[in-house]
Amino acid sequence: MSEIRLRALLSASMIAVLLVFTAYQRPASAQAPPPPVSVAKPLAKKVTQWDEFSGRFEPVESVEVRPRVSGFIEKIHFKDGQTVKAGDPLFSIDQRPFEIEVESAEATIEQRKAEVELQLSEVERARPLVDSRTLTRRDFETREANLAVARAQLSAAEATLRAALLDLEWATVVAPISGRLSDRRVDVGALVTGGAGASTLLTTIVTLHPIYFMFDGSEADYLRYIRLARNGSRPSSRDEGNPVRIKLADEDEWNWTGKMDFVDNRLDARSGTIRGRAVIENPDRFLTPGLFGRMQLFGGEFDALLVPDKAIVSDQARKIVFTVGEGDVVAAKSVELGQLQPGGLRVIKSGLTPDDLVVINGIANPAVRPGAKVAPEAGEIVSAQSN
Image (cartoon, rainbow, N blue to C red; front, side, top):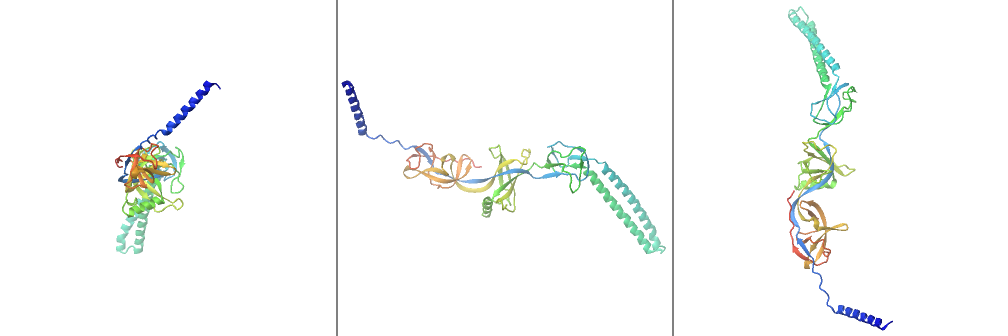
């Protein structure tokens, strides 16, 4: 190795040693200042609880339209899916056989009237003969009995006419309720069977305004509502129509409002649920039976602690919030969450006290973690307009 190269290596080594020695002699650099965070006590206020359920819309009334008389369909008066009013004609059955029955019944009535007049005149002629003892009392009573029979036969004939007129009226099948029709199940010329037996199904009709929302509640929900009603915190839906609000499958807002209408008298032992029903106004007929929806039912009012939803972080299976305690040191508190309220505030069911200082801004900083020291600044949790 040349002398020049050896000198260069020795010089470099000495410089490195000096640098290391200088670094060890230099005082340690100052630590980073504590990260700033905004803190505030949980917002204490009375909130309304809304319990969520899933369900479907059902008609208030649903009727199968069937004929009361038998015959051939002569005319159909509606289009499939049409909205009709109660009393609107739907089907016409051939009326000619029923018109003949009416005419026959009318003729029978005239015959029975003539018979009554004849028997009445017989009685009137016989009355003075009885007084003069020209006619026996027994013969007179026979004539009176004949008059009574004639009058009874007249009443029967009049009843037959009323029945024939009913059959003629029923030959026109009308809408029993107002609502929307399904499709027709028979065509013109079809023979349909009427009466109370195996009558022919012609179509179906359902009401749309108002409309029911049917859902199932859990046993726990039922027990909680009963206890709330007993202590006066919330009326029973059996006694008062508690408010509900509903959103459809494609909606983000609770656009539909109504009230509770019915709670069943028993729980289903197999599923552990109880049926409930709400009634919703539907004047524009937008809501249709069978639609799925999510419903919120008024669950009472209670005092609660709220924090911003953004102040809540997840730690594996837990939900936690950061609080600042003595010495401005961060601590993590496990909390049980309630419903999200307007303005992005979350109800805290348990885990916080009214005096805790919750970190509401700055938690995104990696330096803000349990055990770290922070520089807290006073913040404020603002209440949004209550729903």
